[in-house]
Length: 303
Ligand SMILES: C[S@@+](CC[C@H](N)C(=O)[O-])C[C@H]1O[C@@H](n2cnc3c(N)ncnc32)[C@H](O)[C@@H]1O
Image (tube, rainbow, N blue to C red; front, side, top):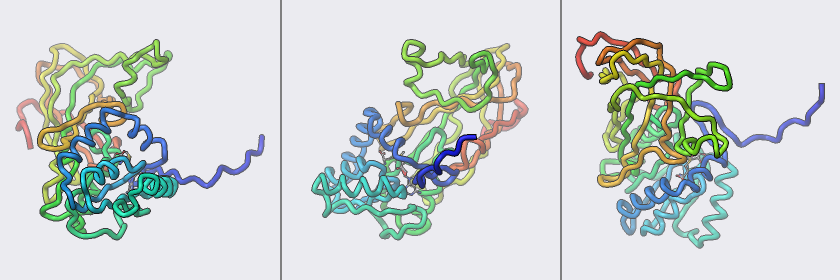
């Protein structure tokens, strides 16, 4: 067996709680639709003189938009040491040393001021499952960092579900792993991507929404959801999609780095015209916490 040198010390955190690396923030930066939508929301929400907290600042682009909107101070929290160091350099390169302060650390434990005017947080993964948006915002509220008058960008999130039929066939094998259907995969075979064979067989139903401005944020979801199905179809998967509500007037659904649809396997069944399920998940608990359990059609429509 060949002896390989030990890998360099990694700054890459990958657990249910910490999810980082320099690739993801660059992916976000390059996603023009996402980034310009956030810029519009920041220009709309941040007022001259505001104290702004940018949670998970990454490249710092959202902090720079907040500074451009007139914030007197932006605290940019980033726990990845390499990203935090690059961000300090970017702050200097933009002459924003008086406005943007980089705090290197975990936003769940970093020392932060009370009652900031605006929290900008893009720790969003479709359905608020894989990333820590909700636990992080809950912690900021508990600690008084965000108070009664704090504005949030985004201010809320909606998660939708649709039933799907799919062969799960990949190169002659059945693959039951979660499918992350980013919009760019729709470029198809000419761009080198395997075509997807998912067929939607129900309406798109709002499964749950979270208002980030509420005093108390839910840690879990447990709701009944009823689908209108194509009669005689055989759903064996569910497609999750999400919309981030950036402000009262701005929202953003699936784009190249945010809110890509997820398709998760479901116990197969033959559908009548309606199908009821209880949807259970832990917000920030990972895709693995998501469950859909068949309910009797006669049960109450929502909980
Ligand atoms: C999806 S990127 C977003 C970057 C940037 N805010 C943007 O929108 O372009 C999320 C960033 O948050 C950082 N992050 C995630 N959890 C964090 C935590 N608990 N404390 C501090 N930073 C965190 C990651 O290292 C990553 O750089």
